[in-house]
Image (cartoon, rainbow, N blue to C red):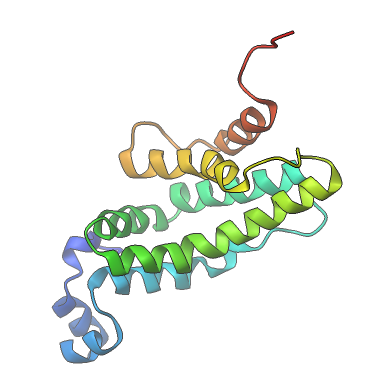
Length: 171
């Protein structure tokens, strides 16, 4: 997959590369997208941790910056684009992405938001699901559709604009 993309990673090619039969591959994975997801998760399992002692803003920015770095500076971006593309037509893969990739990351972000509310950094009436969508959605949108780059300062921009609001002062 890293060499030729998801299209080149047929179940036959995966089996040949692994030195096993195609049946063996199908025993463990229902599709090449599932194989890609497992390989992807194996490479990024370290990326979920947020360093201790960060403020709410620093923790959110760290997590967004780490996601951007993974997608921009490693082969993970291309793999995620391919997995996301296949997940549109593969409900099992889509569920696996939600449960195994998005779920754990959203749980960490939700914890940061809860702690931020408890510390008084964030309003108590926030919809934390919407906050996470607003922070991370633009990163996936740029990755998948390629309409804009993933510059190093995007995380700071997203966090600053979300937490500061974008409306002009209405006083």
